Length: 226
Ligand code: PGA
Image (cartoon, rainbow, N blue to C red; front, top):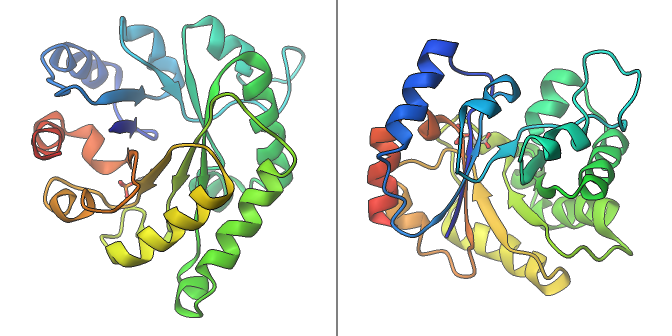
């Protein structure tokens, strides 16, 4: 399985250095781990597969405060999370801005981890499939990429413990796989307890992990249980 670890904006320098040390003893049990720390901490990690949490929608140039996809690639970063719902919620990032980021990532040689998700309202109105289909066609219609991961992350499930039933996730997965040839991850409140149930989802290629990725002990238990 693929396990992408999204640290979000957590950790001080001291904490991340301890994490780097502890991570050297982590047993991935053969799973593919992608660590996505805060960008400023990327150079502290060596000999592991790295992802960034965001890239600029612009290339190299005069864009104060943004980190280009080329810069990330030159640091040895392999993946980039694109269109995480927190980008939309906290930074008002639009779909077209995210699409530019997707294009920049691809152009620079990064593999996008493209996040799509439904709101609680869409879920409750039975519009999940429609919403995911729309988002994916906005990003991917007419394009064929060598490497890309899709992460299905229901917006209401992120950091809330409100995880949809396996059957619902399976429906989304099978719709995605019917239209796109890319591996699909699930993300949203995955932990070492519910992973026992979630790992039974048919067609699932891995998980995008937020909160639990900060705690290597709990993460090790999750890995051991996969
Ligand atoms: P969570 O976050 O595991 O803390 O719910 C997942 C994510 O935001 O990618």
